[in-house]
Image 1 (cartoon, rainbow, N blue to C red):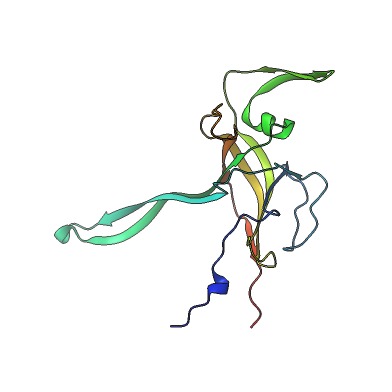
Image 2: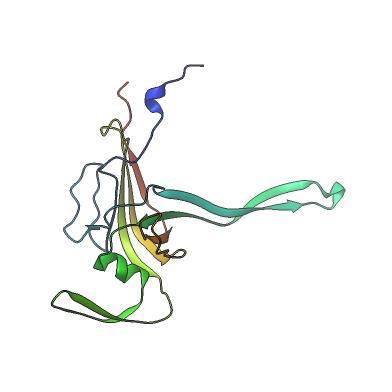
Length: 182
């Protein structure tokens, strides 16, 4: 068996990004395609990175004779992406909180917030680069990304007060990856 360490990735380059835009924004079609001006990078991400999680459960259909498994079936399958934004900026605040009124006077932002949360529906482009070789790149192009607050925001001196989110990919999406030349 041949192994190739050049194919093992460590992500977390300066160029990694979660870019969000209003639903229906024109999406790129190539791995290096320029993003529509409506896309905005959420900014610095927590050192935990970006997490892709597959969901679903396997259901076993058994037959009468010997209770043997006849078929298996995947229920409620899906893909979600989690990240923690670290920058306190309007895009992040609007994702996390249901703000009904926002005004800025001098250097003070005043927001009226509902106590409840909501799902924010966006289009997303997530770019991932190998930390040591930025020519190694992956791009997720997600037409419909439903984002929800995902956990507590902790105000402590031991870490940056981040904004945790989880986004569910609804429908099909495109994964692009640069491959090594043959």
